[in-house]
Length: 408
Image (cartoon, helix red, strand yellow):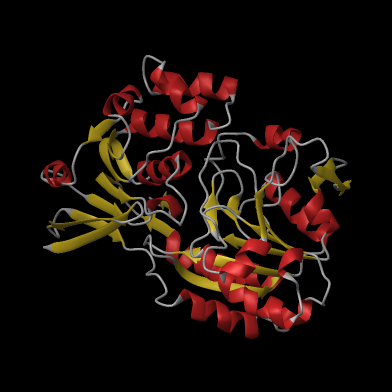
């Protein structure tokens, strides 16, 4: 027997035994760093192929920290890098923590919460509002002739520091370095251009026009230093952090991401048990979409996907559309045509529910879960019953971070 232990949500944990005959594959995911603050402090003083962070700034600089959403241990990172700001003579009133806008509602935790109270009150924290008339300014025209607009705070800053997470992304292939800048710090037109259902036919490293455009934005801004985080399997924090020269951080980060979150199997299982831990903010429908999409690719048609989560967020228009269709499959075409803001996770959920029986542990209303062609799990103990007769079980910790594939 194998003991399976999975963390989900902000503090949930499920444990159960699974016989080795029934367990096809278990991806544990990387463990969290015991002391993330110490790792950040070390990186600040010894970045990758770059002088210490404090040397990148001078007194009087206006600094914008572009903090992506769902960055594990974000508060520890902000607290850890503050020592470099102090050494550089940066006044807290000249620092802005800017987070990208989202097309769907999301609750974000205050990343300043571990700073001393007097410092925390002086550092500004805001979420970019793409609808403000004067909120963006002209950056440049892309190589393809597209006019690019970006947050005025970023354009007016003396030093811009991106903090993001390494991750696989259905639209970008990989989310890294400066993915938060575009469309997240741009205007509504940029968001409209980047809506889509992902590219199932492409791998993470295949050419993607949107990713090329984002890299071009970073080049136009002259970004040379970045901090990037590898998510862990736990709701406790990050599994690793890289900071320094952007090219080196990106190169090492791709290997780190593949080594820890890429799952390749030579056969499909019958059941997938997946867990969604939070990354500091609330669990989102995007997390659920990514998790069931990873599971769907690893199991046979007609199999089972069992999801452990604490999802409680309000559904978007796309998820609502699923419940108004006669089947999960029949929702895919209307979603593609209407392209609501949550078209990607809604399409992933509909595709998974069409492919397999999806069982969901969450904090959502049970009747709503059923309307979206999933079966609600009322209590953790029901999971044992669902696993009793499985033949070939795939277990994914931190499933929203997994890129899965079958090589037959």
